[in-house]
Amino acid sequence: MVDALRVIRDDGSTDPRLDPKFSEDQAVAMYRGMSLQRILDNRMLALQRQGRIGFYGPSLGQEAAIVGAAMAMGPEDWIVPQYREPGAALVRGMPLKELLCQLMGNAEDPVKGHQMPCHYVYRKGNYLSISSPVGTQLPHAVGIGWAMKLRGEKKAVLVFFGDGATSTGDFHAAMNFAGVFKTPTVFLCNNNQWAISVPVSKQTASGTLAEKASAYGFDGIRVDGMDALAVYRATRDAARNAREGLGPTLVEAVTYRMGPHSSSDDPSRYRDEAEVAMWQARDPLPRFRRYLEHAGWWDEGREARLEQEIGDEITRAVQEAERIPPPAIETIFADVYAEMPPHLRQEMDAFLELPRR
Ligand SMILES: Cc1ncc(C[n+]2csc(CCOP(=O)(O)OP(=O)(O)O)c2C)c(N)n1
Ligand SMILES: [Mg+2]
Image (cartoon, rainbow, N blue to C red; front, side, top):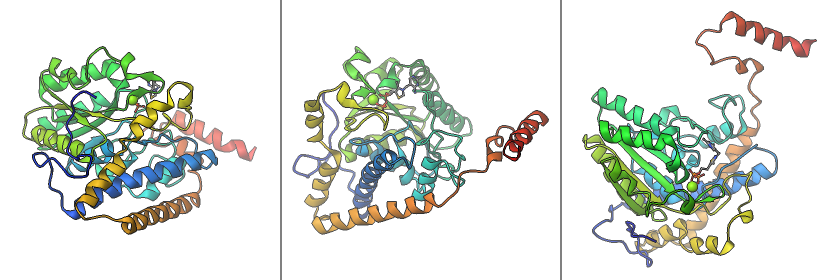
């Protein structure tokens, strides 16, 4: 791997120059966030196979890059997700049940089933709704940052995207605009080596993704994305600079998509198992656990209790969400206009007539 910022060493000790010096509570909260994301992923993939949810996109292997970055942002900042970051929504305080309701598209889904499953939104936590087209969230995030700047607010925006998104026109437009207007944007590229079946080597001829920032006139930094403290450190510093008016930063988190692209994908069709095994040895969870153990904050007992607690929490949320009925038919026609125009009302009335006929 090309040189990347690392904080947690193999033995669980940290680089003293870069260690963010967490308290035990902060460190455990970070591990909890990553474990929640991991256990949730496995449970949701199983739920999808049982036909209880329609679709799921896991983030197996990317927990450090997602939770580490989200925890580095302040409560007033905004998070603009890609589609693999329920872990970041949960960090912002989204209740697990609400997340499950979104996956089921039921009556308590905040977007009433109008979005695809896995397209969470958590307005209270400044967590923007997800856009399916690759890369379109990048100009959105720059626009939000620009608005903050025009209003004189000292806030920052964190935007997540993948290595594949760096090949889109939206990436270049967003990076260029952010550089010229010095918007308070933290570009967090999750370089997980694959864009469905396209490897990163076919995505770019650049040596790294981070170096693309220099063409737009700002800094790019490459971090070990399997090291939550390294991601936290780089994101926290970038967000601080953004709030201080110093402009954007591109953070390339080098990770690996250990699982399938989504519940509709079978990666054994296009990639070598040996590659997966190589990256599994760098799994961000055992890595962080070694850091906790080295600090004297963790043991088998705490691990077992955490797993049990998270498992029970997810079970409760699933049970509660499954009791909620689908959204009312009328909701299909709602939320299009502030006030429903006559032609739409006519369509709705005709539609509601159907079952009666
Ligand atoms: C504009 C557009 N083209 C194609 C797709 C289909 N698609 C969905 S995700 C994806 C790959 C994205 O890869 P990357 O940006 O590396 O993110 P990752 O899935 O690896 O997290 C593609 C091609 C899409 N959603 N939008
Ligand atoms: Mg990718």
